[in-house]
Amino acid sequence: MFLLVILTSLGPGKISTPQDFLKAIGRSSETKISIDSWDAFWRTSGWDMKNAGLSIQDRRYILWCMEKFRQNKPIEGFAHEERPKKKIRGRGPAVQFGKRIRSRRDR
Image 1: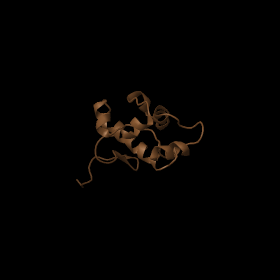
Image 2 (image 1 turned 180 degrees about the horizontal axis):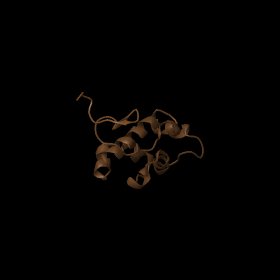
Image 3 (image 1 turned 180 degrees about the vertical axis):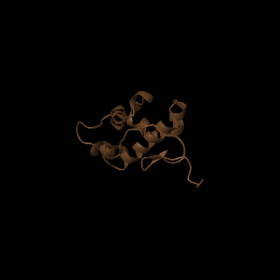
Image 4 (image 1 turned 90 degrees about the vertical axis):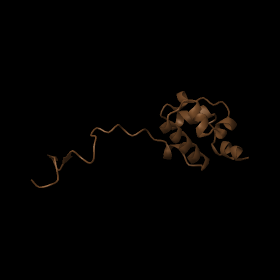
């Protein structure tokens, strides 16, 4: 019954298969996992995704998007790209107010 409510609320031409959903959330999710039916899609757990070889970040993102989709939130509102890789490693900024920081203590 719950699945029927979701499918009828989608409207024509939006998302009709689990592969369309995975493509809509981005991050190449449609290439990482393949599920054919909605019933199998909603029964998929984190363990199933782990056994399929997905990384923890991908599993968490897909499960999070599934939950938002269940709550009838528009995909444009929650789907986003990954954070870019940090360019400066370590604690805090290396440059502050235009000056390179070495140490905070007085010498």
